[in-house]
Length: 332
Image 1 (cartoon, rainbow, N blue to C red):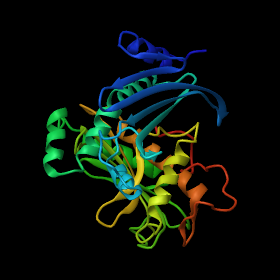
Image 2 (cartoon, rainbow, N blue to C red; image 1 turned 45 degrees about the horizontal axis):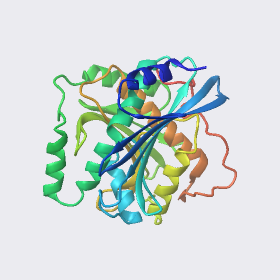
Image 3 (cartoon, one colour; image 1 turned 60 degrees about the vertical axis):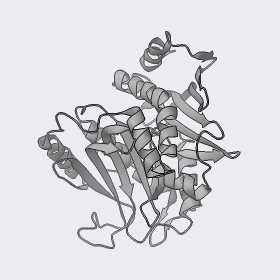
């Protein structure tokens, strides 16, 4: 049975000059690499939801078309990733994004468009992001090449951001907002809900910024997860790589459109996801914040150990718990 999401994807791509695969599409970008979209069938029922397929978008960059990155350089590059994490496979730079497709998806248009945007933009934007690391001049050249809008004509109303923070507070999370963003905290261990109460509280801070420009990909939404101060692991390169790989092994999970990577001059481990968007979408900031909360809960349940931080081989890791005390889905 083909879902409405898949039907929309096939209809949108049927007139394009793409190589048709048994499970998707391939496009060769001469001199740059190969982009592939696959619709991988699944039948997983969990928590009342049925995953029927996973859309996987893969960019394989041609050798010589992008700089040669070390393992450390790849994880620094992931701080700017758009449409999935970068990785090295056999010395070749690759980038993978995934989107779970559910039976009776209530937002079929948004889901299909998200997959199509990733397939269309992953390789050209991803290559430009990689090239932009060479120099300021190359960065400016790649930005000018795409010429994406850098700001919205009309911002997200602040009342909408305030409402999102209030809904999260009603779910038991410490949350707040300002004129352009909304944020919340999720306890990784202990009972303290916020670092504002106890600076040593082990919480994941999730943040969604609206109308923010990406260095290359234009204006949109930036979602981030930051770990407690002082808890960034020493082996952050390997942990970042393994977290990205573990996310891509999931079936029923928040969209894998961002990446764990190393941020700032201190190479702090954090998650970020940039979603290019020419104009604001109603309540998308709340959906993105919820996806971050789900991801932070997954990190807590699978890898977090109190007073130690991330332990990749955490003993007794079970199924992810609900990140909020009430309800099983995003706030309405």
